[in-house]
Image 1 (cartoon, rainbow, N blue to C red):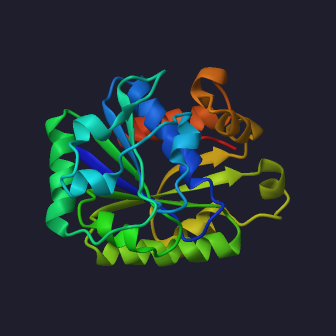
Image 2 (image 1 turned 180 degrees about the vertical axis):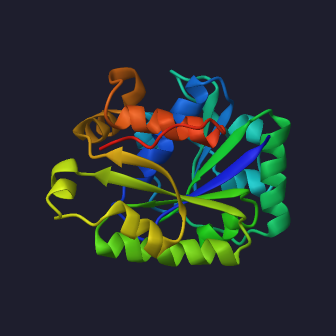
Length: 245
C-alpha cells in the first residue's frame, strides 16, 4: 500500500529530521522504495542528515510541473531504494491538485512510502502536505513544552482529516526518566492523545553521524538505531514490543 506519512512536531529541537532520515533508511533497508521529502522551506536540512548534496530541484518544482519527479529525486548512495526531494528556499502558492500530482508521480514511480519531514510548529507546509498525507507522525520529547506543542499539532492534523496519527517520543534520557527529572511517557500519551509508535533513546551517535553525513544504521546496531528500525517495522504493520529504556 502506498503511504504518505507527514512527520511533524510542535516545536524545534525534538530530533524530527534525524528521525525521518533514519526511519527512511530503515524502510529502504527492509526492501521498500522510499521518497523522503524535506518540507521545511528556507530551513531545509534533511539533505545533511542523509549525507546528500548538489540537489537542484525541489518538491515545488515537481508539483508545479517544472520538472518530473524522476529527474528531481536524488538517490541515496548507500540505500539506492531511498530518494530525496528537497524543499524550496521560499514556498510558492501550491494547490491541492498540484500536491496530488506530486504524489501520483511518486506512486507511479513505485515508491511504497513517502516520508515528509515537515517544519516545526504550524507552518504553511504542514497544512499543504496534510492535503495528501495518509498518516501523521508526531515527534515529541518528554519536557512540558514539547508535549504541549505535540498536543497542538496533533489536534491540527486531526482537523485536516488525517485518519491515522501516532506519536514517537524521541531523545529519551533514561537516567532523567528514572529519577523523575523528565516527564512520564504515559502522561505524555494522555496529554497528546495519540497511540505510541516508539521510544528513541538519546544517542550521541545520531548527532555525530548526522553532522558527518554518515548513516547511523551502518555505524551502529544498538541504541537509537534499534529504535529507528523498530519504528520502521511498526509502520510496516509488524507488531513489536516498545523498546525498554
